[in-house]
Length: 101
Image 1 (cartoon, one colour):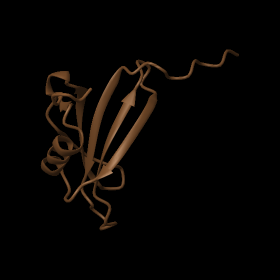
Image 2 (spheres, rainbow, N blue to C red):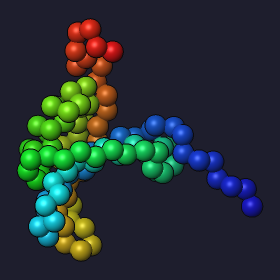
Image 3 (cartoon, one colour):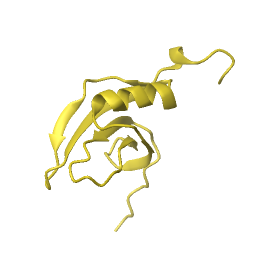
Image 4 (cartoon, rainbow, N blue to C red):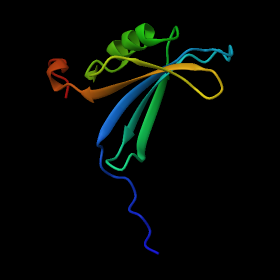
């Protein structure tokens, strides 16, 4: 049996933000990168001051100003009842700060 190739191509990036439904006290945004097969290539997360899309958008502008949300936030509910939102994202080189590469 051939071993499938490991994910290496950065095909899709998307953001996820959450509602702290169960009061864990961990407000955060995730940025996921998947390959063309839908496999996770990498991810990073950072904390935010509040839950939901508005706080996520504000934090992305502050933390990663070249990262652009390219679709509206889509609301979802996990199997165990947690609200979360997903949106596609990409790097927007036109947002580059002068003198920063």
